[in-house]
Every structure is written in structure tokens, then in C-alpha cells.
Length: 114
Image (cartoon, rainbow, N blue to C red):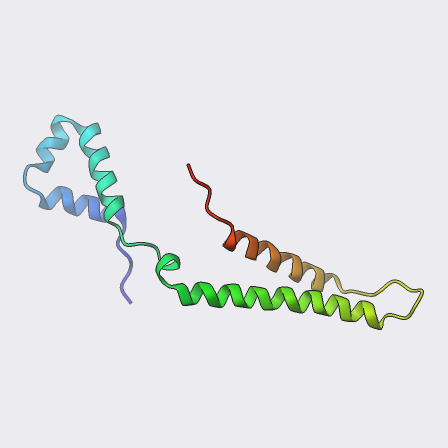
């Protein structure tokens, strides 16, 4: 499997392979490098989590199953507890449910805009 291209490598290759670009960098380093950086980041391929929807769906489905199982297990353990005594729900069940719900919230929440 090939490694994804890095923006720094693309920038260096573009600087070395484009005729006259090094002279532009020498004449106006800040403006030319900012323009090049913007172009290189725009031309990068999108990250895998954006293009590979099946992996994203599998992760969301697995976290959803953990959430439902934790909630169902807590309800079941509460239902079988003897009357008058507090239910004995393991802490690991609560931790798994809370972590899965937090992970789902992080995955499904919209990304903050600038």
C-alpha cells in the first residue's frame, strides 16, 4: 500500500521541478511560498475518513451496538435486582456506555467552522 502524499514533499517537488519558481521565491519569498502552500493543500487528496464511507459506517454501527448493549444491560441488571436493594450495575458497563456515546457524539457532530 502506498503512503499518502505529504504536502511538504509536494511543495519541494513543485519548487524543484517548475522552471523559474526558485527565482520567484528568492525575489518574494513570503508571497510566493504562501501562494504555493495554498495551492499544494488545495491539490492534496482528501483524507481516507472522508472518502471511505464504509469504514465510517462500520465504526458508527459498532459504537451504536455498544451503546444499546450497555443501556440494555443496565436495564436488565436493574430489573433482576431484588426489590428494596440497589441494583448492582458494574462500573465497566457504565464506562463503556458513556465512552461509546461520547465517541458517537464526536463522530456525528458537525465540524466547527472558522
